[in-house]
Length: 209
Image (cartoon, rainbow, N blue to C red; front, side):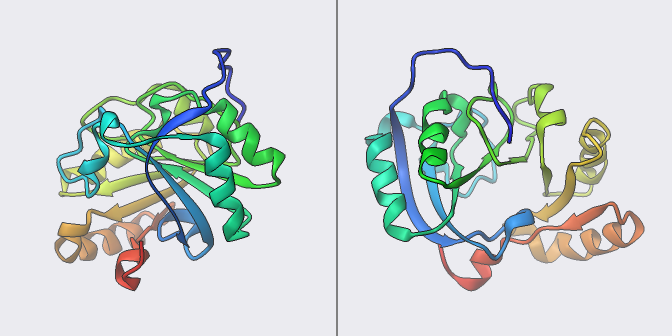
């Protein structure tokens, strides 16, 4: 469990773009039932982002953590995934404490561009070229997920993998719009560099959220 050192006043209301019960489609937990909480607000600015509508935090309703918990509990899932946008724009200490009080595992998907807050059971660290990640994430990440958009991204992926701890699981994932072009390269790269694994956006193939 990753324990942050945040000491701010508890943040009990958060901008929520959407929340839904689905199947985790990416990375190490792919295939598991999970309740997703997508927070609004992002200042990273990935040009290929498929949820750009999440970027302006002010466009999304402010929802209490208690209400989020009520919705999660209806699903009866043991796993919650907090994503964005960039969820660590907010102090998530209180949110994760409530998840754990209710015996839920909580995972986060983050670019690492903002300080780590919250007590997480799993950290998916996906650094982006558009805003440099903070150094603390390299030692904390359970998985490193690099989005492959063009050939140069393989070298960029290696530069980040070199900073991670030995326990971090390494993933290469094709950017969705370039998947047909990049997938053969990714397959060959992983065959030649078997420390890496392939992550696919299986939820898109399954046509689910």
